[in-house]
Image (cartoon, rainbow, N blue to C red; front, top):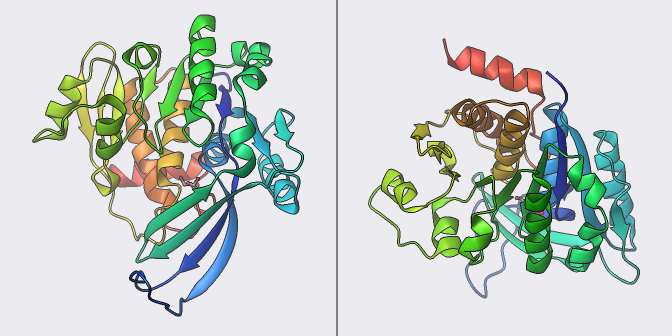
Length: 303
Ligand code: RIB
C-alpha cells in the first residue's frame, strides 16, 4: 500500500481554551478552572490527523504576521506536514479561536484573521499540487469562493474532494454533485442542503442524492455510499475530556483510509475509532491518535 497524498486547504488558528465547570449566563462573570493555548483551526487539525495516521500531507492556507504564525509552522512542520504553501499575510493577525470547555463539551468563536486572505487564485496557482494529490480536504473556515474554486478545480482534475461543511452554509446542488463525499452532522446537513430534518438519520440520508457520511457525536456516524448502500457505525464509550477537534480527527481518518482504497464502511469504522480516541485529551490536536493506536483500539473493541 503506497502512502496517501492528501492536500488540506483550510484554516490555521491558535485555540485559546478556558476550562470552566459551568457556562456563564449573559452579563455574569465567573472564575474558571484553567487556561491553555493550542495550535488548531479545522484545516490544520485535519492536516495533523492525516499526518499522524500515515499520510503525506500538504497544507494550503494563510497565517498572519505574528508569533502565532511561527507556532503553527513549527507545530505542523514537526508533524511532517509540508508547509511551503502556507502564506504569511502582511498586516494580518493569525486566526484565533476562543474556546470554552465545560464537562467535555465546547463552545467556539473563531476570529478568522489571515484565514480570510486565502483566495481562489492562490489555489488555482497550485494546480500541480492539487493534481498530484490522492485527496483534497476542505472546510468552511476560509472564504466560500475559495472553497468553491477548489472543489471545481479538483473535480476538473479528477481528484476526489471531502468537504467538511463546518461552519455550515447553504451550497448549490451543482457543487455538491462534484464532491466525493460531504461530512456534515445532522444540523449542518439541514443548513447545507435545505433538507427538512426527518424522524430518523437513515431517512434523512435517503433524501440526500450523493455519497455522504453524517457524524452523530457519541452515536458514531451514518453513511451512504455512491451505489446507495446505507449503514451506521456505532460510537465507542470513552472518557471524554474535550470534544474539540473530534470531527477533524474523524475527517482526517476517513480521508486517509479512503485514499488508501478502503471501502466506505471500513473507512467510517476507522474514523469513528480515531475520533473516540481524540476526545480523551484536552486540545484539538493533543489527543489525535497515531495509526497504531487506532488499530490497537479497533482490535481491542472487537473482543
Ligand atoms: O474543529 C475544532 C476547531 O474549530 C478548533 O481547533 C478551532 O480552531 C476551530 O477552528
